[in-house]
Image 1 (cartoon, rainbow, N blue to C red):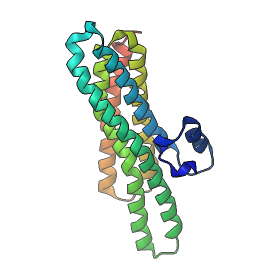
Image 2: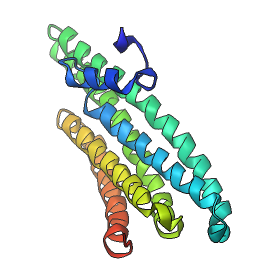
Image 3: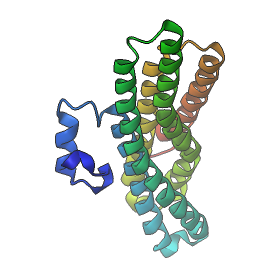
Image 4: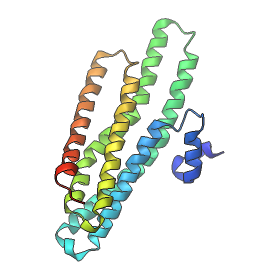
Length: 208
């Protein structure tokens, strides 16, 4: 069965069929990971076409560094797609099995399950936010013949962060832990600031 495969091993059609079905996963979390992987792959292409063009010789070494980073990050995002789906299935299973437990035990297990559900979108958002300066540099210094691809890479990266924030927020409202909530809200602000920075570059410094 297709759902026994890692998402990265599926055909595009199989993945989209599962996504469009009534199955609980894949869902928005897997899509966020896929957007992250696509962003990295497009950035890799821009790096490769920059490295191969002698007109960008001054940027070659940096582009090679970025290429390795994007390749590694792409694999991370693909793995996180499966981890997010696994965590969501476990969350649903936990919510079903704790119904008859004593209140305190039920609350403890629910808190643990929702924190685990947040862990992957949190990692996606943080990983991509950390990568956004690299996307910005290839936008500004990469091969201008593929500027539209660099822009698309950045837009996919931004979408990955936004989607991950949504997935954090939707689970955060079920968590009653003041310190954890404060920590997550601070993280969300930092992710949004990172997106605002590259969005400003796209708006004011990039010409197609």
